[in-house]
Image (tube, rainbow, N blue to C red):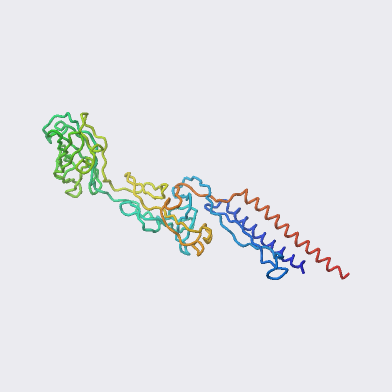
Length: 426
């Protein structure tokens, strides 16, 4: 009987409308969940019944059903925070974690460091990234991001970079180590470090020995030299600087070089003095040490040694690189966030706790660094908010409510009609 079919159709409408309201309710409930992606209920009609057999054109509908719940992976708003471990992805991709079920993927970047120094999610799942080598260079090796030791050992100075001008108008002066300041054309100091991290002050003295030729000497106070006497200077290194006729660095010739510091330092430390890329090395000489007709002056000095230090602070940059800053001013890269990209984000399987896992429909993850091959960039001190639009959800809620009421009306109408049929026997 057609009336009984109407009951079944109405019931299917009630069930589908109720399930649709459940999807909307879940969205509203997660409107403040970081990294949450809203879902959308999609309905389909149920197999219809033909009035004239398989080839008939007239058909009865058999109701509706909830066919799919489609996640909507639009970008959520990004909110700035004060925590250095809060990260957000602006664009496509997911953070990757080690979860109990295997690899988990999330857009929720509210991470923190646990007592073991590992970067973890709120549920203590380790976050994965590309590891840095001993020199701080990011490699392709993936593992849990971990701080490791909070101290770094001292590093002896191996090279000092110098950029200066030597006065071409200077006269040739005979150098006397007993009075280096007054018997050199120009001098300055530079701080270096021995192998145990002790700061050592070196005096660099320059003497013009002829046209376009200078000799440099690296001197150390006897108080810092093995077997030296305080107040007297000890020569540790020498060399020659050759300038071109245009006043640029032609070549540098190293002479003796052996630094014998005291107080526990290893003897024979080598420190290379680099005055810039000379013409003989393929440079122009302009951005190196020059010899122009102006006063001698040091423009810049840098060196690559440092003392032992402890961790002072941590920071992520907008490339997702975690950098440790130590109290001696040195900074070392630890790791870089990994961003996993899927061919079909909608095919990912929700497992709760703001996590997804790979499924047959999603395809396998393609892991890479932020900003590469269509992956989103990682923003530090930021969190991606839920992409739920409350206004749209309320409109959908009202529409679903009206649909539910309309289907309920179908049932009550069919019930009244059936009652009339039952009343015929009277």
